[in-house]
Image (cartoon, rainbow, N blue to C red; front, side, top):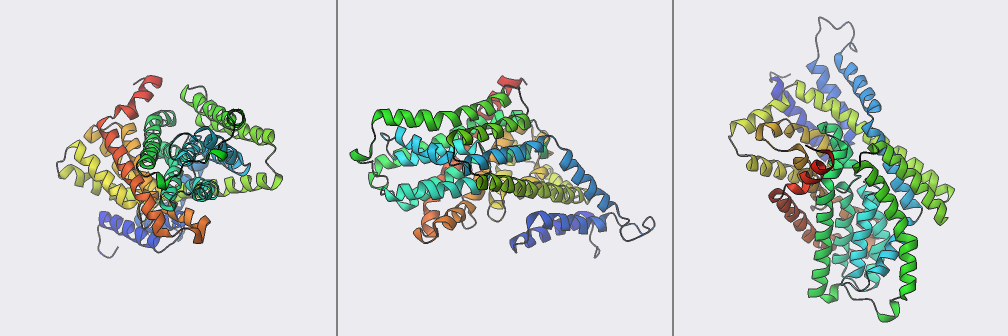
Length: 452
């Protein structure tokens, strides 16, 4: 092609893809179109082609489509999505936030703490960041602002808390990563438990400490707003324990090796329906919307896989992965330097791209090098998972900020949201430093549960 070598064509392919994505073209179909277009060139052989459609790239697309449909790990995706949408549409999250808010009223920034705990628990039910940020932006943000909370502070709480679904299992991102890296989803879930709780805890500590230093940004509730102890106990038992029990059941069966992620997701989906029936809050219209959104989001993820696998196959066939592998091997760096470079690259990619594209397109470039540098793949996965939080928190393309702005419109300025996000962005980087210095946070629980 135009006198270029195959590796140079691969780099051209990557450059055009990034350019088209920045122009706003749909990711999944751009990947597929680029894969088919450049694949047609890569496999072109006029001596064996009887027609213009007699090209191996079309067989590759069919094979990738079948592989995605036949992948048992990906079966968990629609089930976990359905569980999350049912919990959201049935109003269970609203009850959960109210119960935690009552239980934590004595803490500084009690509503912020309640929002973060609710986000953490809700994130275990759905890995869709937009759903968590949007719902909490409609539910918790107005409540905090109404009680005198600083808008930037409240915005940072919602945006950062809503992104925890990327990391905290059972995360859709971890399921996708398991398929891409050919790792055990059970071990990935176990590896993510402590880093996920660490990040959520750091967020809560920051909110409490800041409220103690600057009480004006998060006023304490007035005496007349504090209900009787009996009311608090009733709300916690009625609203908090059922969902918490369901989450423990889903995660417990996965981590104990009793159920596969798909089987646990089925338990969670059924349990969410039972809870919705128990609360009598799920209407037919909400159920229909949950089914539709599950199908829509699942289809998007599956097409992303088909497109990305096609793109990655052609990119690798042209020698694109070898360029990066030779580059890292030629510069003679230490493992820690490799980790720093890869994390900086992923951090920068988070500005224009979402986590799905970063995982599916760029992470496979680094995976073959882990063995070369002697890096544990599950530890590396957790660094990636933490880093991907920044893709939703880094201006100017911080999607969580736009989700919140979309539901609050004129009530808050985008710059106010960005201002509130920045401290949490620093906390994510701090959590990555902690994880790097204490890799056991990612490797201890998988080894304890499943052995070496």
